[in-house]
Image (cartoon, rainbow, N blue to C red; front, side, top):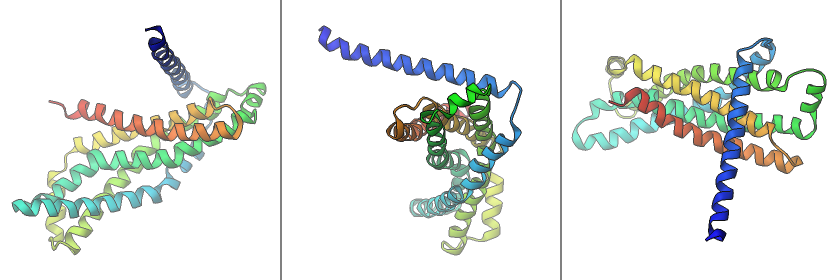
Length: 258
């Protein structure tokens, strides 16, 4: 019996250790986000890296998602003569779910990995220790700007992705499926509610924070040279993706549960 319980207890204690370390790291990082001094230049640089350079991949993902969604909706709704509901399905699906989730996953793959690799390289080459020696707090200089930038920029990316995704559905519906363009836009605007967009933007802000947090946390605690940096990069993307999907359900439950 003891030989069976030992691995379970070891795994449970390891889980508690990682959870506690992450909680302490999060609290420390958030506290530095709201206390001066701030580094505006670092924050602006991270906003450009996270937001501007992620626009191509997020835009391509959004437009093809909207196009496929319109096409698949038409295939299904045609069986029930409900083709007129396609604009409604496209705009609600994009703004509530697909826009923030897909944008979050794309940014996690691009930005989360880059953050983990950059900070992890600084850790294994002792650059973070050098910052501490020079009386520069690593949390203030490295972690806080990334958390602030991720939280602020991802909602803007998702808002652009929503517009591009709805436009992709418009293109397929009008130029392939024969919809009237003015009627399609009118139905979209009439059915769309403020809560649909707001819920997606709230999700985006939370996802941006989680992506930056996982990238910074895994990079900051990386060990073991190049192999450790590679493992930290993988863990950052995987953990951020899992948290995005988990918090997506929680926020959806918060907004739309009755």
